[in-house]
Amino acid sequence: MLPSWLTQRGADSSMDESHAVLGTPLRAPLMSDQEEALFACGCFWGAEKGFWKLPGVVSTAVGYAGGHAQDPSYRDVCSGRTGHTEVVRVVWSSPAVDFSDLLKLFWECHDPTQGNRQGNDTGSQYRSAIYTTNERQMALAISSRDAYQTALNQNGYGPITTEIQADQTFYFAEGYHQQYLAKPGSRPYCSAMPTQTVLEGFDGADFRLPQKIWNGFDWSISHCVLRSDNAPFRLVSDG
Image (cartoon, rainbow, N blue to C red):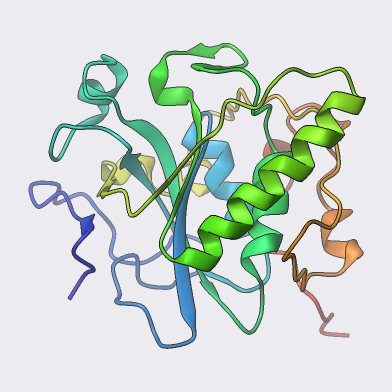
C-alpha cells in the first residue's frame, strides 16, 4: 500500500509502471532500508534527471505537491490556482546514499533565491521547495539551508526563498512527464539557474558520495544535466 500522503492519478492509464532509465517500479512501497523525499527546483524534467543519476537512488518520479487541490493535472498546476509546485519524488537506499548528498545536489542544481521563478519559467509552480518525510530530514534540510545561505551571501546572492515543509501529499504527474528527458523525441529543455555555489559540510551532514560523482556535475557549463547521457553515475567501473 502507498503511504497515506502519496497518491496516484487513477485516471492516467499512460503511466508506465517502471522507471524508464533505472527499470525500478515507480509505485512500489518503501523497503526497510529506503527513504523518500520531494524536491522542487524549477521545471521537473531536468531536476529528475539529475537525481536519477546519483548512485544509491532507487527510483524517481515527477509530480505535484505543496498545494490545496486534490489530484491536480498539469494544466491545473500551470494555472497557478492550485498552489502546487513541480516536484521530483526521490526514493533512495539509505546505506548507499545519505539525505545530505541529495541536499547537496538540490541546492547546487538551481538558484533557490528566485521566489516564484526559475530562469525563464515564472509562476508559483516553479518555486523552490523541500518536502521531508521524517524528523532527521527536516533537521538536515534546515541546517543545509542555513549553511548554503552563508555560502550564497559570500557570492552576492540574496535570501533563500525555498519552502521547507513536512509530509506534503504527492500527486504523480501525467505519464508523458515521467523521465521525460530519457524518452525519444523529448525536447531538451531545462531552465535551472545554478549559482555555482558549493554546499560544503553542514551540521548533521553525512556525505556518502565521493568527489568524483560531483565532478560529473559541472555547473559552470550551461544546462550540464541536459548535455550528459541518461545513465546513472557508477561508483565502481566494470573494468
